[in-house]
Amino acid sequence: MDSIWFLSPDMIVLALFFVFSIAFLAHSGSFSSFTRALIQGNLTRHDGPFSLRKAVSSYENYRKLSMNESSRMRASSSSILRSQRRLVHQLGYSQKLDALDASIRANAVITDEIARLAHKDHPAFFAQRGHAMAGDVGRVREALKHFVRDWSEEGKEERETMFSHILEVLRRVPEGARREQKVLVPGAGLGRLAWEISQLGFDTTANELSYYMILALRFLLSPSATNRVNQHTLQPYSHWFSHQRSNSALFRRIAFPDALPRVSPSFHLLEEDFLLLDPAARTYDCIVTLFFIDTSLNVISTIEHIHALLRAGGTWINLGPLLWTAGAQARVELSLEEVVRVAESVGFTLEEMGGGERTREVRCEYTADRQAMMEWVYKAQFWVARKGA
Ligand SMILES: C[S@@+](CC[C@H](N)C(=O)[O-])C[C@H]1O[C@@H](n2cnc3c(N)ncnc32)[C@H](O)[C@@H]1O
Image 1 (cartoon, rainbow, N blue to C red):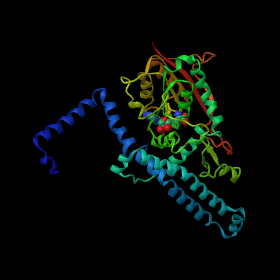
Image 2: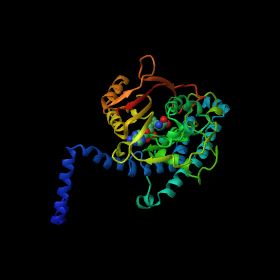
Image 3: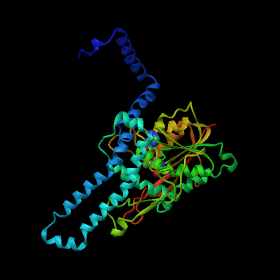
Image 4: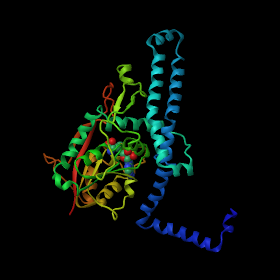
């Protein structure tokens, strides 16, 4: 209460100026980017759900949290009726839980290395802030499944179902002209699509905000952590006993990466909130969004920003579902028809896809377990939109 009286008159003037500046910005267009910078900085860089600190704590705690869960499963299985214990024993359920523990130890070789690399790459950050935070083991397990989707032979079919539509459009650009074309892939995840685009010869930037993804991708990009094809193995499905035909399917090992990605003059990684990328600093010839636009809390801002970041005549290629963040978190939850209207009113013209349609349905899965007795199939929508010249 008394602390303001310790401020010098100069400091009080400065504080008042700061408060009035915020109030002014709040009523001007610059507020949103200013506040977003402030909030997002906190979200991703300090203690936020996708921050470096949170992600590292989660990778470090993967082993401990997963082992705790396994212990709870063991306790739960031993609390069945005495008459059933013999059968459970005959099934070898205890050995099944031993196999779960072994898979956790195997996966932890990867998660520990991801965390170690993060410390090595950001020594000042951790020296200053420390890193003890509660971990989110669910997000780590999701990231492990993304290794399969993006960088394993097992994920090839799932990738090709989607990538082929996008790459086919990009292949229309003559090979000799590709090097001069800048492509941005916001929400790049573990980066395989962006890397494939760079392999076609485009100057490609993978943009990602979540450090769960960024650190996992860095693990692949780092020659000290990954230096040969199929060097690593994971047991990514071992945490979900549901819908499994057999224990060998549940605990199967997946080798990765099936190709060796490296940062290069044609493949860049931009660790930043897409909404904060400054159109005055750089524009792109093409922006490719894959399973991305519905993850934003305001899809209208996202589409406006895609438009702003494209040069006149530039192309936006989209493929994905409309799975809005639930619980009234997304500002608006639009139908396909409405999203198309937003795109058009922002200034895009959608290419004709045949039969008078401007979007094409692509049935696909996302980080699926191909051997599981369950399928979640998206009828994702694909479109190619042009910004007016
Ligand atoms: C559903 S995932 C799709 C990842 C990847 N495109 C794929 O298909 O595998 C959406 C990704 O977008 C990222 N993302 C969401 N909002 C973002 C933003 N504003 N800037 C950068 N990345 C963002 C998330 O962290 C997440 O990795």
